[in-house]
Image 1: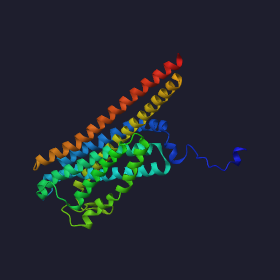
Image 2: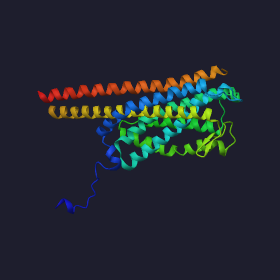
Image 3: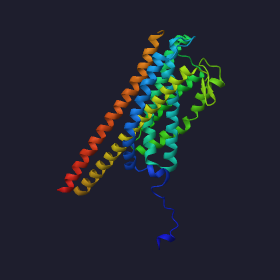
Image 4: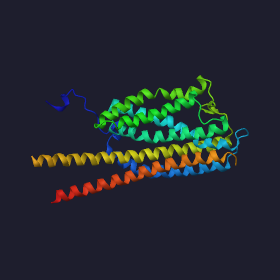
Length: 260
Length: 49
């Protein structure tokens, strides 16, 4: 039978999304991107934090405590964005069996959890002088705490199985179910009466002066780039570790074959 | 500056935690690269003999 008469659909390798599924190609591209990403993160984050801490104006009501915003708000956005990233990577892993998607989902988890912890702790440190309490079980705070537990659940599930593939699938299911929490976090301040203030920045504009908005946006850019640089380095390490495991297993099976 | 006892821990946490995450990722990546290079070297030597 000639190859042209075959009715089997052969995936076109090297096209579309699967072009980046090749771990070797990913490592080559990532190695080139990594230094630029890291340098951009430092160049955005350091001036952003200095601007926010020393040169932005104090708030007439909150005084200097408002400066906590420059770390709290980017961390809060990254907490949600990171989880959304896990959900997208899990979906790609489920649908296309993309070999890097599962690794990405696993490696985003601890970084996202760390940024969620930063959001919760800095929120608490901001809340004490402003609200008079470290913690309040209101909708925004509680839904972010749930997000933190979802991260911990995802980290635990992906590492709970001897077969990593089963861990990826179990973690993926949790990520896809848990993504419903993201709109709850976003709209909690509108849907319920909360102690937490409503959003000051939206797609249509911001309700704060540019002297505060500009350093906030620079800090956000810096933290986003930092997040991306850390995740990229972790995925690179995970790909190489996977390659090492594959080589060791191949060697072990060939040694077992020789012995037999 | 007012509220320093709240501002300093917030900024310290927001800088130190990502810094340690970055450091641990860099260490892990470098160790993985070294292990892979050692494994490749051993395989090459075995193939040569």
